[in-house]
Structures are given as C-alpha cells and as structure tokens.
Length: 614
Image (tube, rainbow, N blue to C red; front, side, top):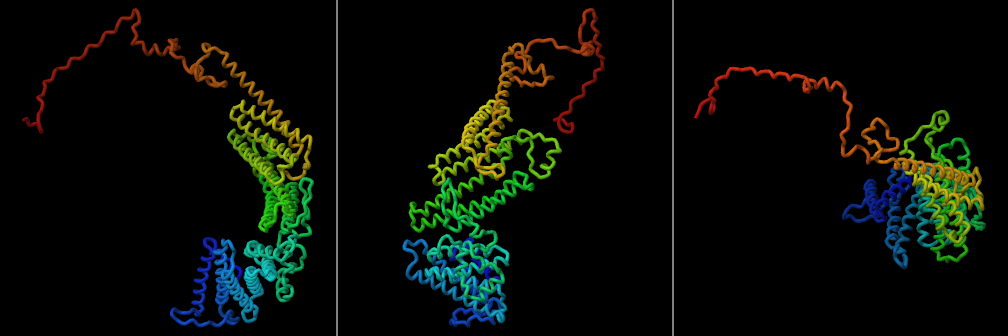
C-alpha cells in the first residue's frame, strides 16, 4: 500500500514551490476527487448526510478508501500547520482560540490515522501486510505526537515520537530509499530532543537511546513485528541501530585542547567525535596501502574525515545555540565547556582541510617542479621505464597557478583558525600559526618566482626567491626550537614536519644561488652589448644569414640614410646589356629604314543612322 511514500511525496511536491496553504488546497481537491471515485460525494444543493465509516471490508474491496483516510488526516494536519505558520510571528505566541483550533485539527488527523490503524490491524479482512500496519502505526504516532506537542504533554509526546522513530528505523533496514531517513532527521529527531529536554532527560543520552527507553515495550504485538524486521533494534542498550553510526561506549567522554581537558556532556558531539576517530583510522590505512598512489586519490581519502569533522562542528554549534535560546549566560560553565569544544573541533576540521591541500599540491608540499606529473595509473606505472616528457612553459605556468591557489586556500584556513574563540589569547599557538603561515608563504613565493623565471624575468624571480628564503628561515628557526608532534607515518595535516621544513630550506638556498647566477649572466650580456660602439655594429639586414642569439637590436636594422656602396654583380648582366651599351671603338648600328606603303584613299565617313545623312 506504500503509506509513507504516499504521504511524504505529496508533502514534498506541494511544499517545494508553495506553503501549507497550498498543500491544504491541493488536499481538498484530491479528497473531493477521491470521494467522486467512491460515489460518496455530496452533490450541489443537496442536503449533507453523514457517510458510514470506513470498514475493513470496504478497504479490501477498494484501496481508494485507504487514500480517503490518509487524505482526510493529511488535510487536518495541513490545516493546523497553516495556522501555525501564519501565527508564528506573533509576539505573544500562539494562545487562546487559535491554539485550541490548531490542537483540534491535529487531534482530528490523529483520530483519523488511528482509525486507519484499527482497520488495517484486521489483516484477515483488509488484506494488509505487517509492513502496511507498521507504516500506518508510525504515521498515526507521528500525528499524535504533534498533537501532544502542541498540548505540551511532553511525556506522551516523547512516547509517540519514540514509537514512530523505532518503527521507521526498523522499516529502513528492510526497505530501500531515503524517505525514512528524511522523516527522522527533519521531523522526528528534533521533536524528540525538545520533548526530552522538557522532560528533564539528560543531554548525555543520544536520541536513539532516548527513543528506545521511551518506546512502549508493553505492546507485545508491536514488539514482535519490530523484532521480525530488526531483531537487535530494541536489544541495544547504548548504541544507535542505524547503520554507520557509533555506539555510546566507543564515544569519547572528554576532549583535550591545549593541555585543558573538557568533559563532553552532549551525546551528539560524542558520537560525532567517535565517527571522526574511526574516519581518521581509515584514512591512515588508505594512505599506507599501495592502492592509493595518485594525488587525487589521496585527497579523496580525506573526504570521509572532513565530513565527520564537519558533523562534529555542527553538533557543537547546535548545542551552543540551544543553550543560548534557553537564556543561559556566557559565563555559565556549560557554555564555556562547549566553546572550548567548539574551538578544538573546528581546529581539527581546518587541520584536515589543510592536509588535503598539502596532498593535492604534490610531494614535499609542491616544492619540486615536476617536469611531467603523472595523472593516471598507467602513466604512474610506466614512469620509470619511459623517458620523462618535457612540458611547454605554458603548461608549467598553469600548474604553478594551481599550486598558488592551494597555498592561498591554506593561508585563508590558517587565518580562520585565529578567529576561533580563545586562540587570540594563546601566544604559543599564535606563534605556531604564524610560523606555519610563513612556511606556506615561502612555498607560494617560490611558485610565483618559478613562473617569472619561465617567462625570462630573472630579476623578479630573484626577488621572490629571496623573500621565500627569508620566510622559510624564520619558520625553520621556530620549528627547530619548539619541534613538532607529528610523526612521519601519520596523515598530513596542519602540523609541519621537521623533514619538510629542512628540505624546503635547502631547496630555497640552492634556488637563490641559481637565480643570482642567472641575473649575473644577464647583466654581463647587457654590458657586452652596450660596450660595442654603434659605428662598429653591423645592421641586421646585412647579417640575415646569422641567428641573433643575443637578441635583435631594433635601433640597428638598416643603414639610414643609405650610402652608395659597391654591389657584386654577375657577368651575365653585361652579356644581356651588350647591345644597349656604347663601348669606345664600337661603330653605332644603322637604324633600319621604314617601309613605304601606298596611301589609301580616304573613304567618306558615314553620317546618321544606317548610312543616311541628314
């Protein structure tokens, strides 16, 4: 019968471009059409007569009665949500007759859904399966929970939402799709968390644990149906039954930040930190294996730990926002502990983000200028057997630009760490961040210097290389005194290893000497060109057969003004011009006499058209 998909798809389709008012109108039209198909609609200008209630026999004959019940319950729910949305901006809140009307609409939808559960429970007559009964039970519990939420009956509300959550979790194990996950994350879980807070349930309990404890275990038939789908769902004591989440026993109870230990009181933060630890262990395994060899593959391995770190940061921020909404002051110990946790979690997230950029930049953080980087597994495998390919300067400059973008992103991430709470007052951490920023500034300046060197701007390359060397020298001085806690086998993050800083220092020392030598050679060439006097220079037009290796002097292309100079001429010129040159001692040739032709009588000229004169 697919009850959940029918309800959720109708909601999403209407709320995608409209609001609850639009959804209410659509449900009214659908309900009228459904009654027409069932021949129970009240005709125009006719007296209303109450129809008989839907029974299991009717439902077995025609499944449109199922849609009739669902549309009726959804219309009442949408009507209540429309009133809540309209009066949500009221300064005094929703009170009086408006609140009573909203509760009445929710109650009508819950009674209609519960009546549907009663009909479907007679499976022998209605023909409903266990899955259909569970879906109808979960939907009825969700609407009933919304009614009790508005009534502020927190314990019954928590019980209803817990029932819906347990059923949807069990159904998610046997049915494909993200419909149940969306319902849990968007509607049920926030309501459970708020109802648990109002019921004085400790925050250290996770939402799955709260739902398991609030679930009505006295309903044996419901327990049996859930055990058929997920036998271990109700047996787990301190862990979530959903796939991919971590149980509470494995979650850390404390977090340490700069020699300060803070107790984790929020279960969501503890679960997120446990997921981060597992993702970090998987990252280390992937990077240590031989399957991950390309920079893009190594960077993709960081995605899981980045997502887990982001979830931990979001959970911490959500916990702080909840306490602020409750009116807790900033001086409260809970706020202070959460602020320290937030700084530690965000620092860890940004650290992994920087590590991903370092992996993408290449070996030794991109300090080496590879002639032809391998981007595929085939090229990586054959790199040792084939001769290295020489890339054009344009391709090299393009790769250097990509590295500069990664260095800029890393520097921005370091600046964002300085804005975290408590970092500005920590002088030791600030010095470490400044030394790390100088290290990446040196790498950035080195890449820009190489791009200038490829475009024959040796003086600019020398200045940038000298700046990179100075930055690296200051960074190396700090790390040599304080050292780093990062090991050589651990995944790359914000921690700079001693081997990396020493390698960059030696490389920049050699690059600086090389740039100085190139600038000196360029200066010597300019001096040799300028010492030659202009009168002794041969113009370019006279030495077109030579390649101008030292460059073309645009001021000495031709001789101007032109001078009379002897030009070598071949003897063939004199043979051709023999008859046209008067040599001494040669008699002039007699000119031939013109032939005389008899004069012809001039014919009279015709005038006018067709020879007729005027």
